[in-house]
Length: 244
Image (cartoon, rainbow, N blue to C red):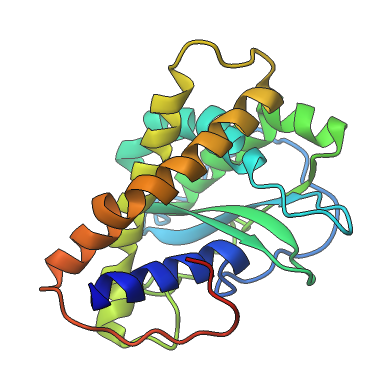
């Protein structure tokens, strides 16, 4: 029970604040859609890439989380289905802080520069992305430059404060978590009676997903994570209020 309470505290803290380990996106306009161009045959080494979706967050309002679900399910899930065998590792990252990066949803993946270029072109050409940009829900989309790969190491997008062993092993864990989250969205989207309009539909799904996490996450996810590690105690560092 003590381990479970500690894990629940940790989860609640992350849910409130988001994580700050992902570098902030550069400021500026969204990159226009471009057709992929061939890269040299020597560029077959996988690197880590970030595609960051900067979302509107009006002053005085709570952070809007539901656009993440729409982007993940309608934009990125088809890409993963088409490019999955070319992507070694991937994950989602969600954050909301009143700082330069602000409300941001990130798709982080490990692939060759050629694959990254194809993925970025598909994101930029997606009609849902274009619609959200026109509406103002999405402020900009920023991608790492495929011509300038920077992160070949398996642990180079993990928290640098962790041990090297944890940095290298963590990406496979968080990919499973991200896949689970995406699968839950897909399951909830298949139900009858949801609004037809995309924004209202994913707002409803987000409410239901938060309830699912609140009611079942403690046992289905955190308890079983604790079980894998032998129900051992762990340190939890709190930087603010915890809501259980």
